[in-house]
Image (tube, rainbow, N blue to C red; front, side, top):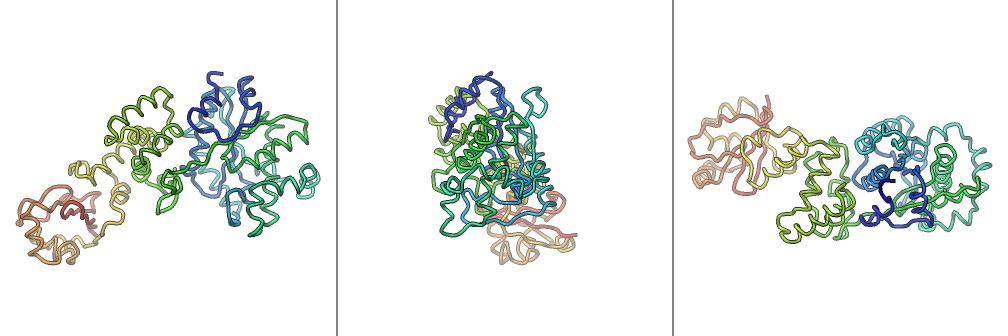
Length: 429
């Protein structure tokens, strides 16, 4: 093995629990290990990224990663960490979600590297033909109700109630581990710390059904220092799909990390080695205002999840809001990034004919735009003369300027009033 997988996770702060004998198993031979991913959405989010990075480190250490997509368990619902039962999904929606998640995992894992090539499996493939009677006869008899009731994921729901469907989840997940142990020589299950009970049920099934030995490793759930949930914003999850979370917003999430959080994040989400990270931390501590750690992490993770081009676009877009950009920078960002940067600013729609009828910039900023930017010509005139108005990041020098500007994306004008007030004017044909 090229690296000690467990030691790698330990210095990165990515170990919560390890079953005795696990590290020795990884040191003994190339070991197959798996993590399950929930297909309840058609994209993974940055909360899933912790587990993806565990698989990345596993493969880099010379072992074989298996990503299990829960096509069957997605129809049941995992109670771990949940306070209520979730909606179950149809087979069509699940299949769509699975194909999307598979495409995202392929960005991180090498599926063509010989013996330790990553593998994708779907537990629907082995549960599809497994009848209920066969399951309770062949699997259910090996685990007692007392054993299942002792799990936190069950105990925490006894007051509010839990359906038999969710109660049986740990057996179903346990059987996944048993199936992969028997058919894929998979000896370790990895997961978040909230999965420990389910994973241990799997090791117990392997012991009782086959007399085999299997192992478990869990990583801590990432917490933010201010107590808010990692990977969440007011708008919801930070997704890996650019249609759900634009690369600009994705980049902004990391660049805005607090100093306390980023020291944790860079160890978990960066592929940089220990020496390089410690060196960056020293640089950062000497000049925190330069945000060296935030910039390093935001660049690496945005490029890996999206692309270098998306990262560069996000940086340009970020500079727009802080006055460090040019008209050319603004013209070079795409429409989705432009709308993402200025989401929430007042948006004004006017027709192309109406724009053409404005005789000068003062008329355009007041009457043509319906008084939303300036309620009167006098106020517009005074602010232009004071140097406080820009259109498309170009300062308006004269009140006689004609409103003949190159449109951004052939349909937008960005008006800035003072330092912080922006208006996005869309020209409708």
